[in-house]
Image (tube, rainbow, N blue to C red; front, side, top):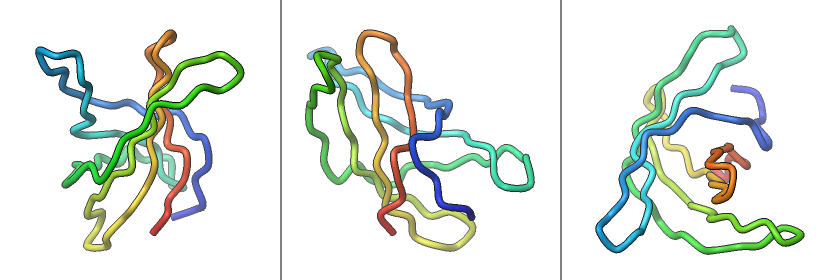
Length: 90
């Protein structure tokens, strides 16, 4: 898998009654231009951030992809409702 950095992804997420959001699954395109589905095993941490006045939430997630463990960061931009895969931490 090529190094991913700030790649837009499709995400299925869940919102609690209290307004908390939790990513459950994401879909991205691999280097062979095939869609890959990644089920998120665990959200390790989340933190609110601001980039030049733009509110976002960063999620550190764990998943198993093709038998390998991934540790990666997802960013959710609140105003635009967009998700992107920031980076793989491994």
